[in-house]
Image 1 (spheres, rainbow, N blue to C red):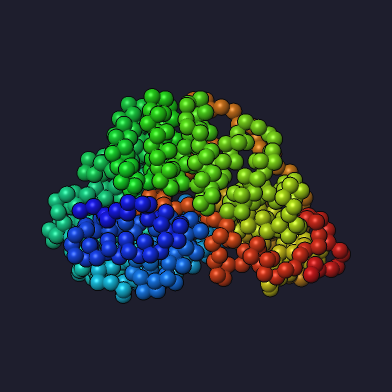
Image 2: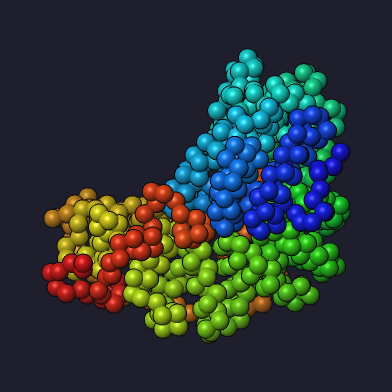
Amino acid sequence: MNVPSDPEQPILHLLRNARYDGLEARLSEAQRNFEEGKLRTGEIYRLFSVFGDPEPALGELLGEWLAAFPQSYAGHTAMASWLLARAWAYRGHSTMNRVSDQGVRGMHHFMEQAEACARQATTLTDNPLSAWLVVANVHNTQGCEVELADIQARQYPDWYSLPAATNPHSLEVRKAMLMNLRAEWGGSEEQMLAYVRQQQEDALLSQTDLQKLWGEFHARVAHHAWMFARLPDKAQEHARLAAELDDRHTELLFGFLSDQNFPANLRRDALERYLGMAEREVKAGTLDLSYASSGLLGSVDLLRSHVGRVGRLLGELAGQGHADAASTLGALQHTAPHLPWPNPLPLLYAARDQGDVRAAEMAVHLQTRDTETITPSIREDILKAAELGSDDMSWMVYRLFPEFKEQFELDERARYRFLLRAADAGNNDARFALAHGLRAGRVETGEDGVLRPVDTAPMQSSLDFARHLLERASAEEHKQSMKALKKTKEQDWESGKARRVRAALPRSYRPQRQEAPRQPIRVPWFLMVIALSAGVRACMSMTSNSPSSAEQATIRGTRLLDQIIEQSGQSPDAAALSAPAQQGSRAP
């Protein structure tokens, strides 16, 4: 049986238009059909998965839905799904050791909220499978919590045992546990294998679903061998097995072969297999681009004869709300402008308007690709990306602040807001600049968290913050920060003993002209973020975007400067971080 349809609008359209009665009726009917056995587990899971959209504006609408229906299982599950998507939006696309300070705080805050909301949902209906799957994904994000001995003894956490007991034939519940056992999250291949063999012995899954579970196992082994263990032969073997067992894993195979630059004939075959699968599945609305982004960017040399199919596929996905599809299309336009791609800018702007920071960044990159001039319209796009939380665009606003100040009538507080945001969100140049200003005694954060210019010996809190910033940047091999840490002595981190470093003026920014790509293609760093992060993103079966602005998704307890300045109403009185404040005084 198909999911109950609404002849008027899709589910998210109902939400965005505040049609809470229609949402409640439709999803409650679907949940009843599921509990009566008229709807399969995969169908009810897909129905609720549409709320795994991290668009910040959805939070207020979901809150209004719950206010109208405070005991709604559907409302609580939808809110929990959105909260988990927000957690992954803050977690970003890198491995955990490279997640920014802002990302770590946001991730943990929203995960706590997601689990609490999902567990509340589990008390509101008889078979809360979708809510339990949100709880499972929260725990998966935190890492493996099951040992091999637990598997052998069949001792599983409640987020698995309870929904498995109620849904003994559910593939989705098994995939959630298999995800928890992944090697890169603290499990092992041995644990995954023991678990899948156990499910085969229990014979509760259909033969088709058991085959898919084995395909998932091989895909997870291939992912770890490719991304973490760096064992390409093993990765290729398991990726091929996964694709044979479930053709949805042809995406993984194509991404791997492209990333490893296998011969063109092998990559071409994998591309055609992937496109065939994707064109069949795209109407179902269940596709993402976990590996396809890296595959397409790694096989640009093969795309001339496929540009129409790829463009249509990415356009349709972007039209469904997949921001990654818009960013990938923009990256292809940037990397291979000689091919007749559809114009990605309208899709990028639509994704940006829904809070996607990578789409906002890509819109800027496309427009600055062949120019050294930043026009007023480009500055507007830069500012919008910075306000969504882009570290690089925030840093650009800081370095070009006079132009932005004049065009957008910004006050001087904005300069500091964008510097701190850039540093907090992970820009290492901004981390170094802020740390340098703190050590120079030219800027400090008070107990209220407001960043303000000064001209005095640095406080201990400023030195502690500066050290933290340099250590974070050094961990990501930022050369200036590594050099600065190497030159410091322990006394340099003690107030009263520390030597004030010489303050440096911020350098002006101008984009470097990028030549058209030649063979072999060298993909710019910001496109590699899209390509290489895609495999990491495949750790979760949900869409994740880069952090959006604090104004759009406020994290309680997060002391981002833009929030604190607005609350305090205080204004620094110096023109710039590098400009000296009045000698011996502190700005109010």
